[in-house]
Length: 440
Image 1 (cartoon, helix red, strand yellow):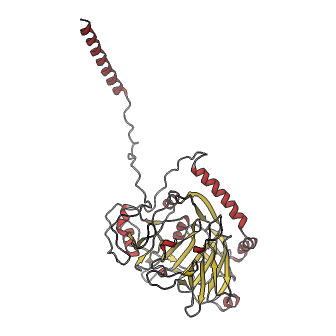
Image 2 (cartoon, one colour; image 1 turned 180 degrees about the vertical axis):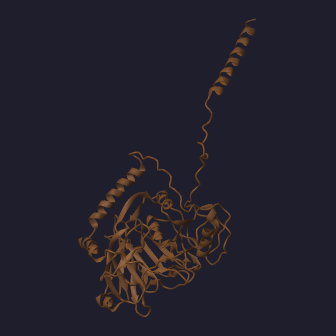
Image 3 (cartoon, rainbow, N blue to C red; image 1 turned 60 degrees about the vertical axis):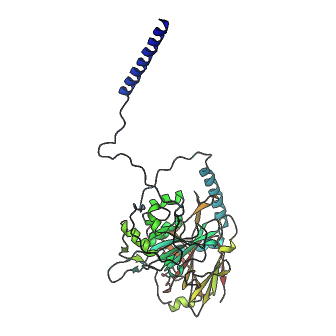
């Protein structure tokens, strides 16, 4: 009898428990529904990363066929996510402290004569800014330029078809390693690269020319700026761009990512980016006025000692330009050896060389596993510029009035400096970067 009574008690407790759970489930509030007229939240689309594309991939000698993209589009202009709050002891706060210390050193390293020359630009630059000639054709439009991020680390050399760019911007990416942003305006030039990750300055350059930006991934901080940068872009490392990516088998990753302009243009066009624009602001080009020729200082070349904000110039990234009268251009060396185009074997060079002196701010954006901090070149405003053309040198100024405005370069006479018809090479240097002039 006692055993039956105990068993009945257990059954009673079990039924009571089931009844309580049923009542709790009935009283629980329903799941929140989206507000009227608003869809339920959807997961954010994955952004491009710097993960190398999978094998197999063609070699540099393979001219790939233009693919027909079928994957979802890579984001073109997308809002950045809200940043999470950072605690005082976080790595981000440590990066901010390092950035502040480096910026203080940069400010102290600016030569007095450089600061005085920058101040003098206020008197040289006209109050009413002139317009640049728009590049267009008989159809009333022109091919949209592409700015390609080109690797200049030692394992990435020699670059491919860099000589085909209309203009090349050179600057320190981080540490003392330089990178190129190459402006291409042709339909196709063959295989270009190696393609490397974007930097903050990449946005500033693409904005000036209404260009499509091509790069191979970016740090989280830089990618956030690209999303909100108001530019069209294609980033490698995303599954959608895998058909465009190739790898050079004779170079180590990540210094071997290459592609073709035609593939990139077709990919972007399939995703709503117009391959043509009404026009884009070209540099003023033409013959050198006699008065400007008389005012030039004979100079056979120049050397730019690119280096890190917290150290001396890095020899492997020392850029030198030497004038060759027979070629009417300045041939280029890097790290003390001729800088050649890997596709043609010819030495790189430019008809016009510009050294644009721009203030640089060290940010708290971490670019790599070594903790290198991203640099933010102050490309709006005004500053000193040096020009090399026809074996002569001039000191002038540059001016950029807004984020989507082109940079204007003024000679010592206060007029737009005329560039030659060939390639333009622009070295963007901080005020503390050593520059050595080579006499005639």
